[in-house]
Length: 322
Image 1 (cartoon, rainbow, N blue to C red):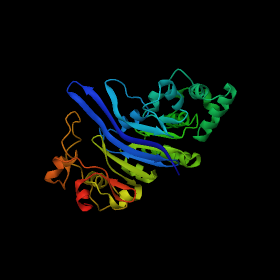
Image 2: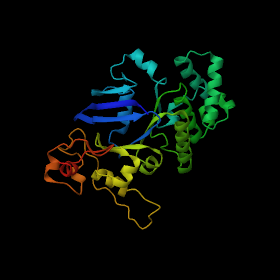
Image 3: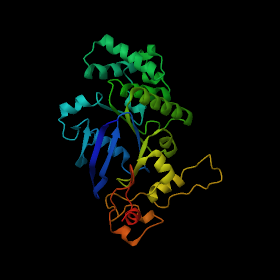
């Protein structure tokens, strides 16, 4: 199982009236073929900015200031616009947060999928229509409804259409950016189950961006936890659940209800994500951390491999492994 996507030292900043906001800083991770990686954290931690940076969708006043994003050896950040247009949809695609906004209301859903296929694949329109109908069937929608308009579908069905669009050109990597936000709990579960099933059948590499920790831990092979623009812990899902090392990772787990342990109290995380125009020195979590040391406000911790495949950025771990 080889690495399909490799992100190295990715940093994305935004110009604001109050200064430069360091929305993403030195973010690194990999995604393997057939793997589902969860990227989680509170709102404002930089998850969506990472996705947009990977896809080169950052616009002024934002800018990717450094780093690399290799997709099967090709650095997307150095690709020309023409090269990038060929790679999107064909090699990497995205399931947007809101299918309502992603689908054009004046075109049928079939026309929108067909357009993407004809743009990137050397096929006839007849073949594109056949593939579109097959894609809709794959996501649980009657293929004959390819001539329907978005307003004729429920929210959950629109999200299924968005998944079908993302799969239109058989990409190697799919990024799902909060793609179940706004759906009711039952529909969320159905859409996530569908995505997981398709990922297994098609051997896709999938990045799930979410703040829904229970959902991510239920379906993802590995998890990367972001806080204030940085990855603070990265490991297999079982390692995170059984042996979370970073105080923020522990706090997220403690703040999540567990129906298997009714007596356990849910603990809130005091404070809020810091302003990234003027982020705190040292560890960005130190002002909210129950284990804070004097050095935490001065030294920036590096990601350290604390056990095979398990990385965390915490000075306590550096001391333990000194």
